[in-house]
Image 1: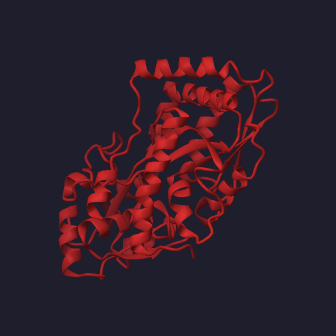
Image 2: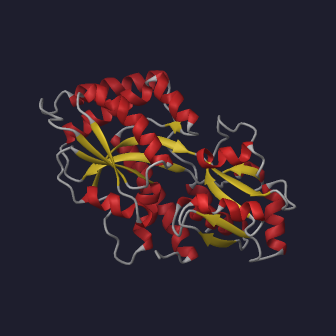
Length: 336
């Protein structure tokens, strides 16, 4: 299993060069020209399947504020959290495929949720039309300040010496932070005990006090606690170091080669949405993401802009479906 995980951990989507982005925008604009002249004919509903104030919500508001300039219609954020993002995502899967309802989903909703239920509420491939990747958000592994580890190598050694004793917190069963810990278990051959919380914010006091040893969470959420020295960050889970935390090594370079767990955020429409509408949405989305102020606002939130075509997003979805499925099945994770 370790070989399969390591082989699949390289993420395909990265920021494009300026020349490649220009070509992508030109192609998108030409294709979008075939879209019906009346589209969009009313405000576009953008379902964020997570609560207000979270990473997806903040990124969604940055993106839609810029997209609506080019679309000449309002893009209205509709927060529909619950069930790990499944509730809001399912709403869009069952919406009219007319381009006026889209979802700002993630690999949590499209690569993990489908494996958590015996009867998943939707099919991440069959029920959606990919629009494009939006951003990649790094996750950080941090430990209690009193824990006698200074690196991932130290942590793995301690976990092997005390199997099942060290616990890690996450934002819930089946969350990307949960999967990050289970991936560490699988690839390092250790047994870290998972402690789920209703949200990652509720886990912090227990890490501060030492009730649990460590936590996986987004850089955006963890940043204030790291600046206040309430935690000790060991590494980021991304394949490469991130610009917002350049001093932190990756888990891969810190003793676990091939490890990579990235939270990505992307836009999907319901299946059977006409291709010209998808092309127009993709073109305007990429145009918005290319704006320097949008890139800067994203960076301030610890996110890296990720351009791409619908086919790029489809490939990324299928890749993570395979990778996440292996982990969920091996760890016997089920929705609660």
